[in-house]
Length: 134
Length: 494
Image 1 (cartoon, rainbow over the protein chains, first blue to last red):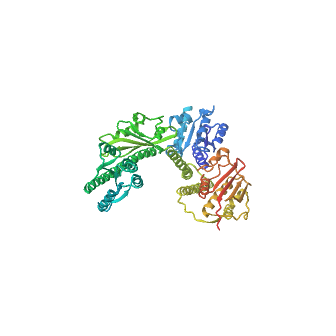
Image 2: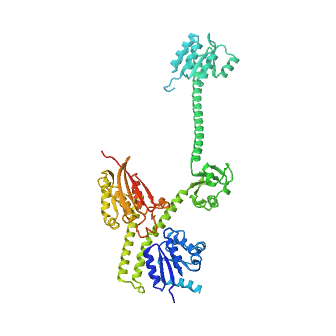
Image 3: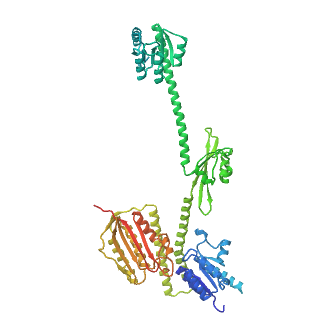
């Protein structure tokens, strides 16, 4: 890798944010963090990352969805992978996840990563997207 | 003739006959009253009821037939005899028409008279018995009719829908509530109804008439009638059986369970929320532990120390949350045993402020609270009152700005002790206000992201206040501060 790829990581849990930052950095990426949906979008506009990883439940239960939707609507954002990060899948009873086709269509997230993050799987998915774009 | 003496009225204007008959009958065990003429006869015969009456046909003042008529009008069961020496076919017919039992031709022998009276008395007993039966029968019919209207009134008053369908699928009984459950404008009696019922209910219906099916039970189903949880019903079908155990029809009871379903949803949402809130700190600690074990990520000693501390903070929070949840569940079950004592609120608040002194100093917050402002005390559980004000004051500190103020005032407001706690903190946005007492609600924004909390504190506060029949109010302006007003009833002790 010539220059490090920039990953925008958004999570309102500061501890998880830091842990995942360290994990992703250890795989040779540059990680920029934000800890709310609002700050996430501002940072996205500023740094133009190569990929985004967005926590689902932040200020509101759907802050992650909204952020993802906004990035995907953005002229620059529609060309980069956005991953939704969540522990709130159907087993916890929340009636939103990114599992059904309609949900994926609406959210337009490229993948859903379950917490806790298994870094090797994450990197594999991420690299697959970068390969595709080449 | 047992001990009862049949009462006989003799209406006879011929003295000899009158006295002779009186003597004879008294001797035979009758109670005899005599009347000297027709006028007296009517008076006596209509004043009280006689079993028997012997009326002379030809009297000087009034005709015997008139006496007969008047007595029978008043007491139709008095058995009357007409005594006469002028027996004729016409008078006999007329006397019978007017209700005379029989005709005693004069002169009569004692035996003749006695046998006539005996026969007449038997007739009276039979008449009385018949009348009694008739009356009972009428009463029972009335009762049945009354029962039927009563049944209808009750069935019609039930808010649940009741529908009885016979084996041919005709509606034989239903109440108005059914119309709402079936969304029908009306049902006619004996209308074919099966095609208007949900297919699953019809399935139940057929089960009852299935010869193979020996189960003697009811079937229930829950149906969403209007989408989006607007109208949920539960239909229960049970067999109506003949005395010989054959199924005569099916009674279907419809119940509105919309509210129940709504509560069910709230409960499951609460469980989801709790699991999510509990998962977050576990995930954080788990993450730190994994970092410690990850050889490819070298950590400095300082970093390690920091992560250990942060893990502790998360675990502390987790523990607090579990305790809060247990408290809420205890309050919900009303299993909290209150230890009611005299609690002086100003003392409670003073000791809470002392406990928080470090935090208060750290933020440079100025607390305005006159210790002797009010010495008003209430009867309450000391621990609960401490918990109540700890939660509010801790919020007032946590969400306050640096160098902010907290103003606490105690006063009396009618029968309540009013505690006002005003802070200069972040306040609430208008859209956040109605969620303030909701479990797990926490004002989330740029200013609060570093403030820890369980989101249960104010929910507990509200529950405590309400358990004392008190009330809690608040005013809040975003970026300016929040004022809580806690009203606790003052019970004056003599």
